[in-house]
Each structure stands twice: as structure tokens, then as C-alpha cells.
Length: 427
Image (cartoon, rainbow, N blue to C red):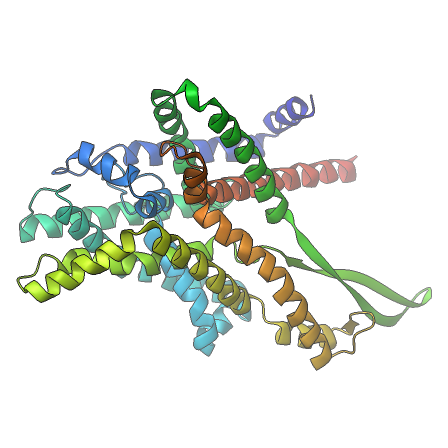
């Protein structure tokens, strides 16, 4: 009943209703574009390639499910995400970029976003060229002349920039983060296909395995919600100040999220693991027998499930720590608290506060890193336990879907609360 009453309330608010309708229409446009394939591709071989490869299946998720039919938006928002990650890392390396991002307010953010858009272009060109070369080596794409290759890359680049524009429009005029919603839509649209594949391979003798799979799915969803929402609140007290009623002090808290890095470490790890395989496929086409032999050996090693799974887990854990330290700087937080007259009860201001925050951050990041690592290799764990290749819990997909859904719900709730508050003031 609460859900129905909330839907009715949303529908009555013209501005909020229009925003939701706008988001829906933009996502429909995205799905229409994603259904238009680029010519010269064997769609059956392409589907077989992505369904039999966990890594490239994950890349397809981040493309918004536009890659599995080699559509106009086959690279999806992947190049934009890569560009955003690079720019965030640049805030640590280049002081000017850090000022844009942290100190110059709205004007600095506009510069930061503009450079991010510009960087998306070369990333889209390089990634599309690498993917086309890889698919050619797998006989998924017909041989292309130089002109045809350039034309295909330009088409894919245009699709990526169009999708980036749609994502920014959703963020500006709709509800939620546009880029995240595009990825979320790609995940949701894959559910019917996955369910159809599951039904087509139904085996009544594996009933216990199916029950275990269903129970594991529920536990994973609950775990994703719990960790996504989990945070450690550090109490902060501000110094006593003179007010009309005498000396007063205020208290608040500093939230440290368990999963501070989101899905960024998974993207990092995925990119690192993708390079050897793509490089090996490219080198296997050269004329030298020695280079071919090395390329085939590298490709064979990367196809080993144990090597891939362990490497993936370790890289995700390592990148979680790395990205958390880049985005949350205990030293600056400690300095800002001291400047604002705030302190953590029982902890001396300044360096001691920074050390304490670093210690707490390391502990909770460990839990978040292990969680992300487990989520990344979850499909292999499930398939190893059930021995059914058709059954796979896409942990990363669940993480994205749950995170985006929770964020969108919070934004809608905040809009409802704000309008209730405005109505109370007017009355």
C-alpha cells in the first residue's frame, strides 16, 4: 500500500512526473539505437562469443548491452567511464585538475567535465579499434578494408558520443545519474534472455542445484544491499560558540562507507585483464612464428579459469584500496575538521585525527575490498559449485543494478520530501 500511495503522489506532482517520463523516453531512445547493428557482423557467432566469455560479457554490461549485437552504441558508455576514471586520477597528479575538481566550484566542475568529454573521443577510437581487431581474429567480423574500418570506427564513435549526451541530459533534466541508468537499463534488458536460456536448459535431476542457486541469489542481493548501504559513522563535535542562549556546541558525524569505491575497481581490473588477451589476439596474426607462439601461450594462460579468477580477485582488492585512498584523503579531512573547529571525541585534532581516520578507513576498506573481489568472481564460484554452465549469478550486474535503484529511490524520496516541506511552508 505504501508503494501505491507513493506512486500516486509522484503522479500528482507535475514536475516530478515529467522528469520520470523524460528519463523513460530517453532510455527508450537508447534501446532503439542499441538494436541497430553495424553491417558486416555474424550475429550468431557474436552472441556465442559473449555468452561463452565472462570477461567480455562483463564488458557488454558496461556498454549498456549494446555490444552483443555490434550495434551503433557497441562501446556504450565504456569510453566515457574510462575518461572519468582517468580524470579523477589526474586530480592526484596534476594540481590544476585538483583545483577544478575540489576548489573552483561550479566553474571548475564545468572545465573538468569538458575535458572528460574531450578525452572520451580518443578512448572510444582506441577501444573500438581494439574490439574490432579482436572480433576479426575470432571470425566474428568479416574482413574490412581500410576505408570500411575507418567508417566503422567513426560510426561507433558517433554512437558513443550520442549515448554520452543522452546520459548527461538524463542527469540534468531527469532523476538519477544518466550514465548509471543507461548501464542499469542494459542489465535489465538482458534478464528475459538469461531467463529464456535458463528454461531451455532445465534439467529436473538438478532440482537441488536450482534451489541452491535461488537461495544464493537471494543472499547475494541481500548482501549487496547491506554492503552498499553500510557505513561507519565517526562522531564529530564542534567547539563551543557564543550564541543568544550562551555557549553552545554542536555534534555531527563523518560517514565512511564500506564500499567507498563503488564498481570502479572492477572496471580497473577488467581493463588490466583485457589488455593481455587483446594483445595476444592481435600478435597472433603477425608473420613471425615465435611471436605467434608467445601470443598463443599468453592467450592459453589467460583462458585458464583459476589464473583468471585469482588474478581478477587480487586486482579488484588492490584497486579498491588504491581508489579509496585517491578519493578520500584522511590528511585533508583532518585539516578541514581542525580549521572548522571540529574534533573527534577522545582524539586530538590534527595529525592524530588523520592517523585515526586512516586506521578506521583501512579496516572498513578491507571488508569492502573482499566483498567486491568476491562479487567479481562470483559467477565462477556458482558454476563451480553447481556444475551447470547456464547458471551464473552476475555479481557485478547485481551490484550496479541495486546501487542505481537505491540511488534513484533516494532521489525520488528527497524530491517528495522537499515538495512536502514547500507545501507545509505555503500553508
